[in-house]
Length: 186
DNA sequence: CATGGGATTGACT
DNA sequence: GTCAATCCCATGC
Image 1 (cartoon, rainbow, N blue to C red):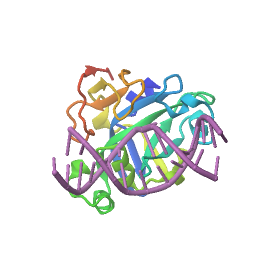
Image 2 (image 1 turned 90 degrees about the vertical axis):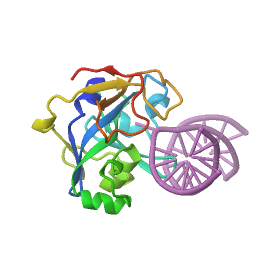
Image 3 (image 1 turned 90 degrees about the horizontal axis):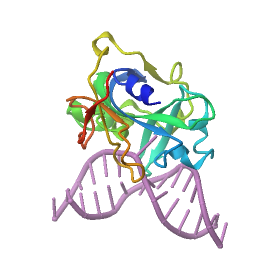
């Protein structure tokens, strides 16, 4: 799962003709209390315990839809949260949906990028290889991104785990910028 | 059935 | 820096 979180950096997320390159992720696993799957299998977490390669989309704070990629075999509740994208295609559509102009404000947060791509809860459980939301392999220019590991943000439990991964110095990474940072390899 | 708590964002002091 | 918006779902009676 940590390998997937790092491997997704540089991959392309596409929905409805709008796309961006992943520049920030966070990993979650049912063995630690910050993960929704920590409580076991419920109607909400069924997607997390299902087959890998699906989308787990849920509503956060009653307002935002957050996109995850389910990983690990069926029966294990684990996923990678997509936290930020560098806009790649359909940027005018992103601006229209987001209501802001600056490119670095379009997808620099997990709630922002789902709004920019038009992703909502209906995509929960869909196949990321061939569904409405697709994640494709890295492009040549993103073969070896410099990845930093830091602590996850916005959570109250298991805050010490360095399971947030981001592209060093990339302006599309969400706030707050990574603090206690260490290299995470490729 | 009632309650409480978020893997956030944007506006405001 | 503080704070409210808003809804899904897990939990407990």
